[in-house]
Amino acid sequence: NNENEINNPVINTRCTALDTLDTVFTGLEINPMKDKAITMEISKSEILLNQIIHGPSYSDRKSVFIGHCCPVTSIEEVDIFFNYIKMDKRYRSATHNILAYRYTNSSNSTNTSMVTHDYDDDGESAAGGRMAELMRLIPVENVAVVVSRWFGGIKLGPERFKLINNTCLDILNQCGFITKKTHGSGKKNKASK
Image 1 (spheres, rainbow, N blue to C red):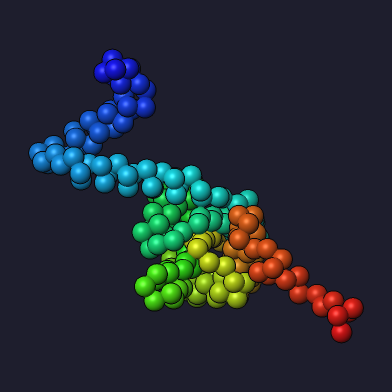
Image 2: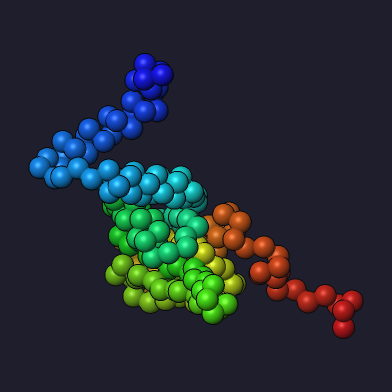
């Protein structure tokens, strides 16, 4: 039985990863319960990162916009997602990585839920707040969106907010957070008058 465990690629990979962590953190005391928590946290991060969807790029007057979307249920998940985008070599060169998120916290003891929401403009004044307002109006919950913008040298003025919000809207739609039920077509049905 031990021979099967030794030759198991999953166990060997996990042992190699733990050996690497042990080498990096030389001198730290080994605590089996703490190590289990670290392994679970790494797995949770891996699962979250596998749920990120990157949208297509849009260009306008040499500026480029790309939306990124990830389901989230806590500030920790928002931080994992946002840090991933900021550190990924494909997106860290963006002039701005604008974040907005919304998620619901439920309290079983009081049978209430509270929406947590916030944004980060990343230097593009008012852009994150406008994305957050768009997400509130749709409404969507349990999602974080980052719009990456590369400045192309031509100032877009207020038009940039429309481009950023459209990129946000497109990635939310691509990820399935916008349905006809949550966001109508805007057309009134003449037969219902």
